[in-house]
Amino acid sequence: MVRLEQVSLRYGDGPFVLRNLSFSLDPGSFHYVTGASGAGKTSLLRLITLAQRPSAGRVAVLGRDSASLNRHARAETRRRIGMVFQEFRLLDHQSVLDNVMLPMKLIGHTGPQVEHHVRELLSWVGLGDALEALPPTLSGGQQQRVAIARAVISRPNLLLADEPTGNVDDRIAARLLYLFEELNRLGTTVLIATHNEHLIEQFKHPVIRLGEAPGRRAPAPAPPAADRPEGRREA
Image (cartoon, rainbow, N blue to C red; front, side, top):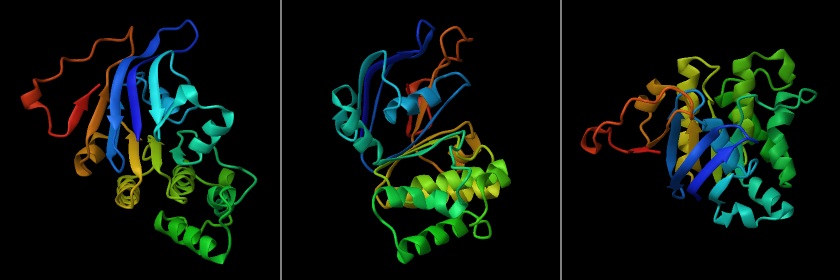
């Protein structure tokens, strides 16, 4: 589903944000990616969504090498990816309902049944009473849940989420993780960038840990392989 081979990334002439990173995600898998602030979690997600090209190395997504994709193929591949951004990227002039309906409209799925499904999903994330609200009138946590609903509504092949529980309380965070796990059970590959160690321990899935960005204090040495928590991978 996703493969990175010796990938490095820097912006302009700045320091490397990622260096010599290699890992792969199997279809139907569920992983977390975590690390210190500045370790490159958001940049990694940008590489996988094809929003950023690597400075070196190879990135393959949904079985396609990103370097070989033309503009049309890149857009086609990105339509199969659901993305939850930290900055939400909602359409302020459209209602909550319309924001979440948008991905379905883009793939030609409309009608009463689709709208019913969207309403059910919004009720599940606690926004059943805010269907006609405009995003600027919502709290940050509410906007986060709209963004998550929009990302999962079309059941993408691959779901990437950047700190999806950063603006909600523990009860809502747990409900959102249940939603991600249910989507994963239906076949979606899930990768979540998070600092929330409590959720990582509560909802156990393999963890990819990024080292700190070059120029920052070096991280503590990794424990011997026998002492590492099961299912975790160092990167």
